Amino acid sequence: MTNSNIIGKRIIELSTCHSTNDYSLKKINENQLSEGDVVYADEQTHGKGQKGNVWETESGSNLTLSYILEPVFLKPAYQFELTVVVSLGMIDLLRKYNIDAFIKWPNDIYVGTKKIAGILIENKIKGSKLGYSIVGVGLNVNQEVFEIDSAVSMKQIAGEEFSLMELLLELSRSIEFYYGELKKGIDLRPIYYERLIGINKELLFDDGQQFRSEVVSIDDYGALVLSKFGEEMKYGVKEVKFLEL
Ligand code: BTN
Image (tube, rainbow, N blue to C red; front, side):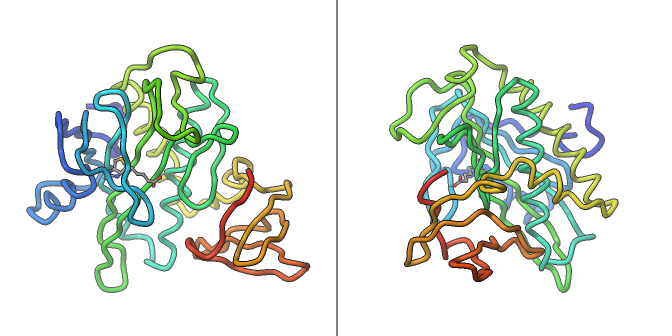
């Protein structure tokens, strides 16, 4: 049990599974999971990343988990707000350990130019509402060596080992706080922009053409708003690449 009221109130611990998101989906369909439950695995054999990518992590070294949410108060069109909630929860967690992390739109958490965590949210729409959301989080914690140069862990930054269970409890509290704020109708964008890469900083982007822009905003539906050669443009997930951070 965590001392959160909802998020992480029940922890389902698995030594291994295919993917905590897939396991959660199966258990939701069997009516065995409800809002706030978290499925945590030491090891995933087929961890899923964004855009059909694979999420590979060293067994037992990192946080790989899925939270179950039932955000029935949220219209499906505004589902990006859940990414805002979880991103802010992750940033707060890392800041508690003096790790200065930033959000890279839409789903990544970075420290400098290296990725420390990724978020994969899978939603089920029921009628005009969001029925449930499976919020998958992969946070690099104690892993010391990565196959890709662009990844980093908390241990590599802080020089110390972290307790995965303590991090899970802290993360649950942080996410619970922002989820509660969202439910109350509080606008989380001002805090989100404080930690968003590209706000007040011109970066190089590529949408088929290279151009420089600051991040103007993220619209209500989660699109990235940039200024391309003076014209405001909106981009969905696969429509633009960051060429620098
Ligand atoms: C990304 O950055 O591409 C998103 C990575 C999300 C990985 C997590 S690990 C726990 C959960 N289960 C999965 O299969 N994926 C997410």
